Length: 367
Image (cartoon, rainbow, N blue to C red; front, side):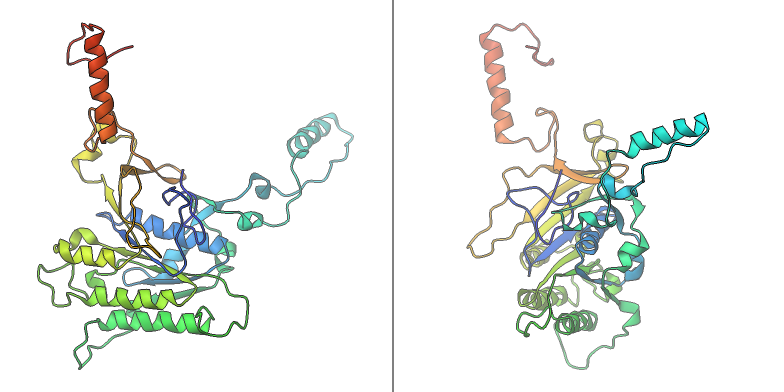
């Protein structure tokens, strides 16, 4: 099971390390899976948690309208008591059959406490979501959302040479206007109670943004995305905002450039889906749908970052939940077996030989 701290992604979809979480003013980079199925789902978790926590949202996309993305947010799994309305004690009717039905209703609801609102659990730390259901419009519309849809913001190529694409520049200006107008700028005097602005930027670096980073081996706009990330980090550092950025890294041929992009973000994870690969039919991975690689974790106020002890993480999409957990495979069959597991196997072999085991080398030891 997974959970995060403020501002969290939701209990279902971030890795549960020491204390977890996304610090305000930081950027989480998600390297998309090949079909952009699971990375898009993590982005929806991030936005859905913002809706339930009554944060403001800023969603930008060049492919799908941000309003369509918001309509696909998963439904929060509220407390069981919040799903039932309080029922008064039924009166005893005259007919015996009605009396029996009334007794069944009373037995079912007699232990349920009173319910005040459907969002009674919004003050709780972290929430769960049901991916088989969409969030109710009443809950979604209660949150304040700002959208940036690139086709609705026509851009023109600038006459002066600039390292940043016009589409990225327009996006950065739009985000800056929202931060200043809504009072998320830390430099501005606080005139009202301020909350958190959650920024979701979908599939940056793709050709739909006018970027040829993923289309050519030697792109013309080689440093356009890196320049945008510089500006984005500077903007977030001075505001009450946190951003999640997805990038189709599997289309970027220059791995050195992709490494520079990763270092420009505070958190970086990559999703490797089994869909379309030989691992999809491999019985060893039948319980999972892909691997999650931790590229980078924050190192705020310190010189170096420290990756978690265990890096073998996998994700799976159940009927109602998307979960991330440690990959559990047989040690002798695992592709990424740890040194501890190798030592345990060597120790077990030594014990077996010392005990005079007569089992063949092709069979497992049975104690």
